[in-house]
Length: 301
Image (cartoon, rainbow, N blue to C red):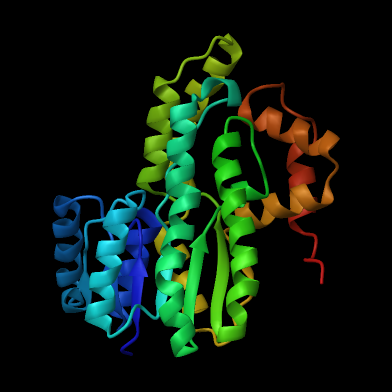
């Protein structure tokens, strides 16, 4: 396998697990990180797995368009034209009620989660079209389709990624370029730890919101409840090797249940379930039975 893949946001979590797995599978991997220190750490782990020679760690802030152009120009030179695939995984969370998030924080979130994947696609698509082959996997989130209280800004950014991916899939298809949307649920990662820290620090003029933030921080710190990021990495690898991948993949039980809940249950019911889960309202009687019934519904054709 001599194909090259760029994985953004590879310092930790799903990005790191994906970069290591793909390098082990024989791909030439360019795993972007935010600092030399994080790159050294990732390369050391790859060398322990005897895959270090197939993994490079360019330092990249995906919101810096000039740096993106420089890094991808270097990758194009090293690969003879550009990567075969890109996994746009870099992302950040921004927990908090809509009214508690300021404009600067919201703009930064959109720059990382939404604008960066579009810019990177702009950099790699010309070479992919010339080759008549390529893959772009945009890592969104189940939060794009199943919106929870205190995650509105994050969900908005990921819903934007979903819309962008659907348009890009149709635009790139005539040239043999496959564009796929990946929607993970919760996975144990630094992003969850960072979200817990943010919930712990954030205060609100609404005391009930503040109480919910502290409860959310405690819940997110229990990473043992969530699957390891390696499971998502394995799914991403399968998507890359599948000749005709689907348009979108929901990864994880919570992702599949969340999507079904929002698709099949009236808002009057799902709002109550989500409000109870977030601590905004009392527990809903029969919640466990409802979730079990929703998760057991077969996918619509």
